[in-house]
Length: 260
Image (cartoon, rainbow, N blue to C red; front, side):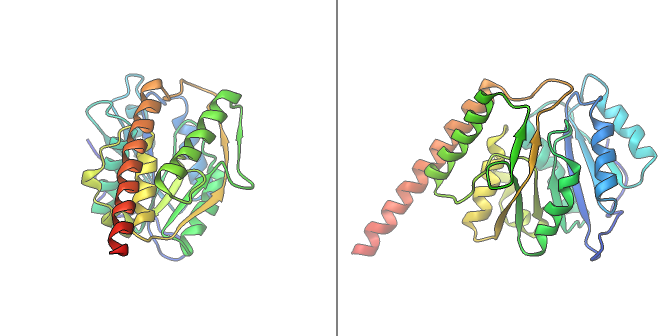
């Protein structure tokens, strides 16, 4: 079941229509705070909750919130298929309704709503704006040292393997102009976990879009269980290595051709 809205509800100061996509799985305790935060700091945006049939009733709660707020919409999916699949479904929903920009945002409180206005302001000069933990002014709160090392190391490896000048390619708080999404061949995106974020950022950069990073404060969730797992890390490492090998091979072939 989805909400019956066929066009954007809210509009920004410049008349643009923006939708914040919040994927959920067992986030009943966190969702009201996330929605309220977005409505407080960016009251002109619409919100789309994409729920993967959460056993804890998150989807039903989202319906109740949407019933009282015409800028909140809900997309129910049959089951848990991963973060990437949830965002792709949300992108399709937004593209069908003519939004000008979309935002990815977690429901668990790790992405602060007060950073949302700066993220959106960046779209005035950029095609993609990434909330970054690993540039000057960015930070993380309540992370164990091991998690920070994993994230910093993963992003360093991504920059080296793909040759992409992005400090935080794995972050999930970001904004896209929908024209960018239309051009990224989203039907070919197979990444299910957090490497989905690397995939989209890399595709946008490869196509020559302006990708900007702004500093954010990332706060570790206080309620519920993190979705990070060994499988997600393994998938990201494997896919980035594959993409990097193909990228380097193509660079080598191009260099050989230029010498002939």
